Image (cartoon, rainbow, N blue to C red; front, side, top):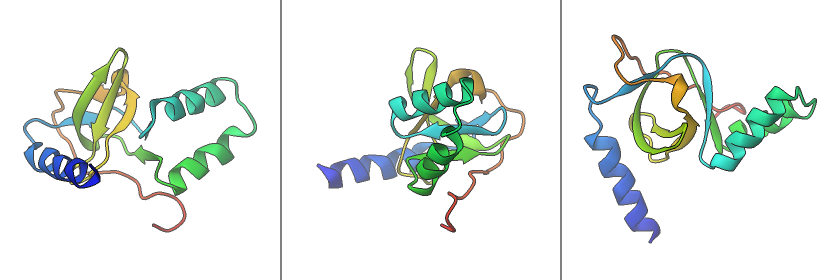
Length: 119
């Protein structure tokens, strides 16, 4: 099952061309698990003092990534106000809000920030 998933991820990464690519509208966070994204969003909204540490932990483990403005991404899945995006060449899909994705960018550029912790 894991091998099958990895093969599908590779195929999806190869099939996404720059013509089909979307771009991020700004610096954003996206997470593999939609519930993690919701937790971070709630912590940010409530200005929870534990939020920055939790967010840093999710980035360090690569549960979540942070993109730069204009980063090229493919859109794998949509679910209501959410989209699961895939940076070029990445095997993983990360959930974020549709509102932060420009499906018809004039210019896109690779720009996924490296996770904190020196990876």
